[in-house]
Length: 137
Image (tube, rainbow, N blue to C red):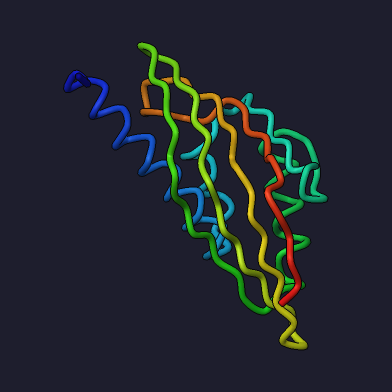
């Protein structure tokens, strides 16, 4: 049975995952500072992206995402392990991305995250992507 602390941690972590998607989808990349720790390592290479720290990733997102006319994140299948002040998660993401010529790509991937509970709440300390599929529609 989950304790109240574990239930709270799971709900807080799910909210931070949603906050990530909301920030990226809205182009509010500075809001990612509320998602990741300052020393986080982020590895998007499995889907053709970069590996770097938060500053590099925010700059890269601001550079590449304007090439798409529309995109969004849909998260689900949250697999979580909370262990005191640390946690690990694996979260499914479906990410349709439309180009200005109306081509649409559907990306299926897993966010594999390491977490730490900080004074500001739960934050991702490491993220890597696992590719599930990519398909042009």
